[in-house]
Amino acid sequence: MADEWAEHGIRVNSVAPDSIATPRVIETTDRLGIERGAVAAKAGVPLARYGTPAEIAGPLVFLLSDLSSFMTGQCLIVDGGMRAQFPHRAATTWTPALTAVPPSGQDQRT
Image (cartoon, rainbow, N blue to C red; front, side, top):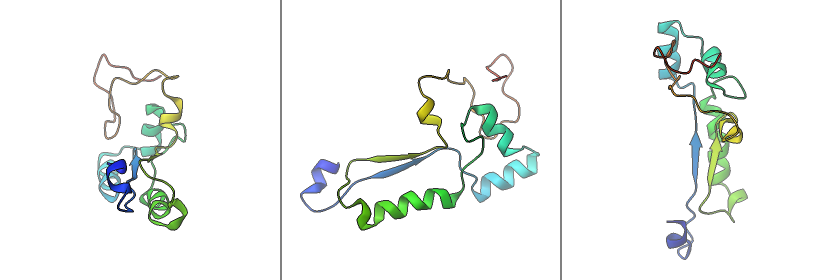
């Protein structure tokens, strides 16, 4: 897509966030008594926490500004370091986002 639109002066980039503490996530985890930092740490997020919407806004502002005027066809990964450790760390077999306890018999990342 970036190649197709470049001749029209249109840049095509994206941001790929991971676990972000949106108002809905905060409300749900608080209601269920789930500590977000513990979930992120158990899931193997190197920064051991959820990101915030403001931390996604920065990369978006960058992509919308002239500072990224020579960028197209790129994806900025904003994930607390999850991608940096792949494939060096074994992947989990369960999705921890809003799961206080993983399904029985699955990787519990102890």
